[in-house]
Image (cartoon, rainbow over all chains, first blue to last red; front, side, top):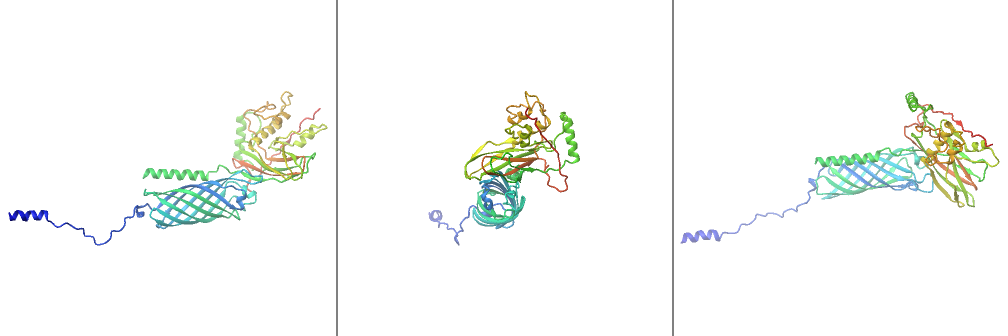
Length: 197
Length: 257
């Protein structure tokens, strides 16, 4: 009888088990930015290019399409090659009003990024060449050089990384000076989709 | 992963190709501004001669071979309508304090024939001058101080260039279908009068000399630009190339009896 009571008390009256918590657990970051792909990336973009200054009197804003190829050297810094083309119509009370004109720009850019989980904010700047599809602005006295010149400038934007390891998208605005168009600049605003390999 | 890579590369290639394609590379030339006092007997004009490079030996051989293949026993033009496309954009301003009409006339020369509307009018004789311009705009009325911008399009030039070659090389004196002035007062696609002798496979010469005339009733001014699309890079821009120097013959109509 005593033996049975001892056995029963062992089963029924056992002390409850307790976890060994020694500190507050850290909050889980989801998604983990460290798992986002980093390295070579490409971007496709479209938007609007406005000329400002003297050229804006005769050249309307135009649709722009572009692409980038780059490499994230660090989490916060990347180098990228940027190509952009835009198409415009000339305007104003001039003999050449209504003509079509395309602008092509190619630049090498550096990009600084601040990432906050899925969001990142960036600033970038670069230098390269710009070329007009025709000598129209030259014969109008707006362009100093026949068709091709240097360009340099920069801009900023915001990027949102999807839950996918590779894809993100964002908005950016850039302001570039054009050596062939003294007194004129261009403002580029685009939406883009980025894929990091 | 691999599927994504391909799509991304395709997207980049497409956008880059679209951005960089050389689909619109015309060259513009500024013409000399013409001012008309209004009502002149001799219509004021300004002329522009486009410079082209001479064909290389190989290109000349290709032209000769093309001539043999076409079989109509006339030279194939180096400055041809299918390679050189011309357009004129202009702005006419009424300089007076009263409204008035204006018309823009364009004539000039291909490498074979020159047409001068004023000279043709004089050759026709008669008490009242008769003008048959090669290319003309609609007559428009402008208020005092107002301006009008317009374009003489490539297809207008294409028609004028066919007419010019018909007058110069394929002139039909048959009174039932006279080339002069039949081709000048009719669009060839609507009424091909005067084109009986023109071979259907003709390579039409383009104009290399463009004369812009401003016919007005009151003082006006025209500013203009000539736009050239040069498909095969035949415009002269390299000092090492020889300049092509054609010598077109002036078209002279028979005097009206």
